[in-house]
Each structure stands twice: as C-alpha cells, then as structure tokens.
Image (cartoon, rainbow, N blue to C red; front, side, top):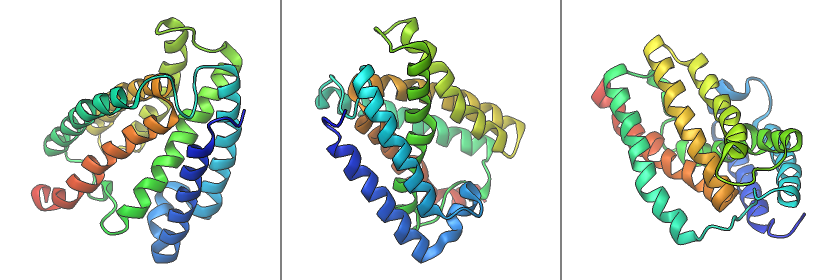
Length: 221
C-alpha cells in the first residue's frame, strides 16, 4: 500500500504549506470555493482522503502515484496536449468572455493555483476513481473497463464548471471542454500515475490561469 507513496506525500505537504501561506496573505481567494470553511482544514481533509484512496488504488488496480508509462512519454504528451487545451480555452474566452474574476490575480495565483490543483485532483478525480474501482472493479485495458470509470469522473468537473458559468454559452463550452480534459486526465492517471495527472493540470494552469490571466483583462475589458 505504501510503496511509492513518497511523491504523493511531498505533494500533499506542499499543498498544505501553500494554502497556509495564502491564508496568511489573503484568505478571501478561497471563499468562492470553500465558503466559510477554513482552507487549510479543507486541504488537510482532502489529503487524508487522498492517502486512503491512492493506497487502495495501488493495491487493487493499475492506478498509482507513478504508473508504468515512462516520464519521457508523459512529458511529450503534456507538451503538445496542454497548449492545445489552453489555446482552445483562450480562444473561447476571446469570443464568449468568461467572468472578470475567472483568474486569481498575481501574486496570489502563485500559491493558490498549485494548492487548488492538488485539491481538485484529489476531490474530483482520485477519490471518485477509488469509489468506482471499488464498485465496478479495476480497468483491465484501454477499453470499456477504463471508460466506465473515466466518463463519470470527467463529468464531475464538467458539470460543476457548467453550473457556475455566467452564461449559457460559457456553460456549454466549459462542459464540453472539461469533459474532454477530464477524460485525458483519467487516462494519464491510469497510464503514468497521479503525479503526471497533477503535472498535466499544473501545466494547464500555468498557461490558462497564470500567463493568460495576466493579460486577459486588458484585452477583454
């Protein structure tokens, strides 16, 4: 169960530390997502659930902290798919205009987004995958046994983002975009491991929330 857990534990500690730092600087950036709950307690709870889920998955399936795929293959896939997803999202923003507060401003973004990436991957991917594997059994290949897990898991973030979108057009776009995004992420988790699934999201956040977030207000408003 605990074999190979080192990277996950390091990631978890960093997420808690970044959250604690951001709370000290400006807690308000978390309120839209966590409400009145203390952000550090939310992240700690997610981490605990994540440790249980990844421990179970490593014992019972091919989902692991680090999967069988090579790091060179993982980097190659991230290098061309993430810019594609980001370009589509930026193009949609130019046409459809997401809300002004879509991106957390710098410098808060530098601590907020890495911490939230860990939370999202645990809460919306890792734990639901653990539940579905327990109910349906582990995937046996790149076939229906994987997609019966990947599709419902990808739907979670797609639906959440669609519900909170500010217009019908951005709602539809968010649902479709994040559905595809989620399917790719679940496959990356299965093939390369949780660490690379998180890396995929962090790379996307760097382009969408950080780089584009710096310039979008001047271009759109």
